[in-house]
Image (cartoon, rainbow, N blue to C red; front, side, top):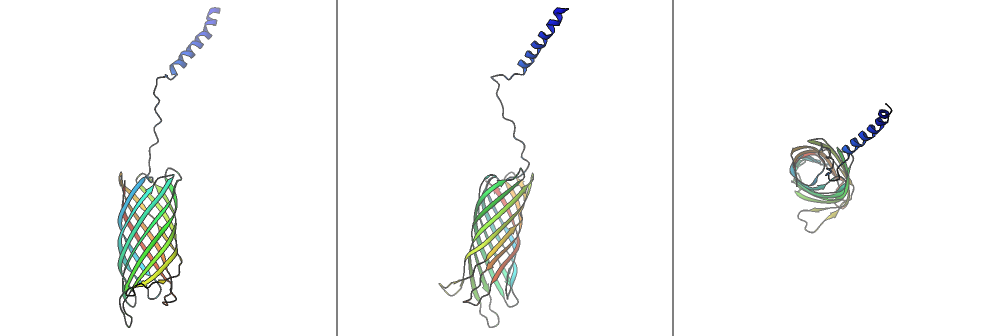
Length: 261
C-alpha cells in the first residue's frame, strides 16, 4: 500500500511531461501570419481618374444681375492613401447664357486647381485630409447691346490660393464626405475685348467653396460620385472703370465616374 502511495506522484509528473511535450511546437513547423481582418469599407486607394459633368445655377451679382443655368465638363487626377501624401489636379469648364433685366450675356468659365496635403486615417471608416494649393479662374462675359449701351466682352482673370479640409466616411459600398475650402484671391484683373493689350487690376477678396460628395462603388475599380456644391468667387472692383464689386455665386452638382488605376 505504501508503494502505491509513492507511485501516484510519479505518474502525475510523467503525465504532465507527456502533455507538455505533445503541445510543444515542432522546430520544423512553418508559422503562418494571422489573417488580416476583412476590410468592410471603401478607403482612399492610390491613383484615380475622374471624368464627368455638372449643372450650375450661376448668378453674377450687383446691378444689373445676370443669372441662369449653365453646364459643362469636369475632370480630376488624384493620388490618395491613408497616412500618406495627398495630391490632386482638377479642372472644370462651364458655359451657358445668363440674363438680366436689361440684356443677355453669353458666359463661359474655366478654372483649374492643384492641391496637396496629407491624408489622416481616423479609424477604419473615416479619413481627414487637410490641404493647400493654388487656382486660376478665367471668366468671359459677352454682354449684348441694349438701349444706348454697346455690346461688350469682359474677360476676368483671377488667381487665388486655396486652403481646404476634406472629411470622408465610408461603408462597404458607399461613402459620404464634406469638403470646405477658402479661396483668398491674390491677383485679379479685367481686360475688355477690342482693347488689345489693356488690362485693369481689380481689388482682391476671399472666396469659398463647399462640396458634399456621395459615392457608390459600381465595381472593384469604378465609382459613381454625386457632389452638390456652392461656390462663391468675389470679382473685384475697379475705380478707374467705375465698376463696383461683383460676386460670382454658383449652386450646382457634379456627377462623375471615378476609375481607380
